[in-house]
Length: 423
Image 1 (cartoon, one colour):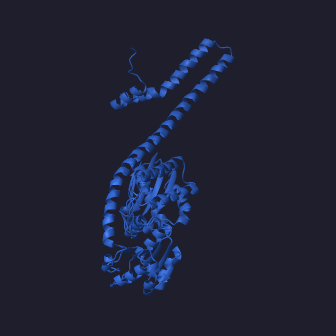
Image 2 (image 1 turned 135 degrees about the vertical axis):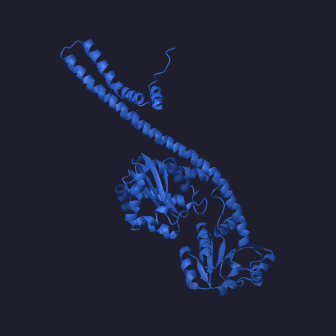
């Protein structure tokens, strides 16, 4: 029995290849059922995100046979030639597969080191496999152990503590300056991808209110609708700047949008209550001279990049500690798995011995019922039971000796304790 993890991710293939074998969530249950049959595995789960698609299997066949069936199934299920995906696939078995799953859940294999979203996606993959009935004891235990490891890494390391994107860094900086964002009023200038990410982080942190200023109102309205924000034009910024505690700007303008004079006027209206400003644009949206004003905390994208660089280094250091936790917990799981196999073997051997015993006892009782000499019956029972129990070990010893398998012979002698001293 083996655990296999096979997949494709952002490291091995571009999005044009990854999207060829991604799985639609609505079809995942059917895909899991189909995979159980086509790949001939005992248990299965599928993790499919924008950056990776991975199949987790428990199977009895050799790895080569499993690989061939997996590739053939992916080819048929997604209607893509195997030649377009095979070079990008990676394979892990047993401990390496366990280690890989745990690293993925901890964000150690992510595009952004330590990102937390992948754990939620793995939990969804677990729930979908449970609902589809494609998961049993081993895979269930593996996922539960994996979730425990991810929680341990988050608790015992700082891998997720530091901001590593300018959007997240900007919001994180605001959280350090303001005791609470729940009453903060925010003005976002622009409606591009960066500002969208900033808006999402602010919304997730329950910021008091958000106003979005953009050249194209319709573009801003589409984003604002998702976070309950107000929308204004760029020309209306001077009328709204005094109400903003936080200003974050990222547009494609070639000239500054917010000048020193505009900020001075806003500060007078605010009675010099400070404004926190972040300019994520290149070229700048906020005039450099704004830094000369008191009661203004202005950060540029370069300021944030230095923070991000330090935070990335902090995450890399935390990742070393996290890798140690993963290796340790992989060993723990594999020890449990070996114990499970041992228990199965012991149980099977014990049942076999008990079955032989029951047959011989039934025969002995029958003989006693026919008034056969009790001592002769007991002697026969003991002899036949001994012979039955000795048969398999004797055959194994003889086979090893006749085949010149010295290592196996020594191993068998050790198992049966044949070299013990009576002294």
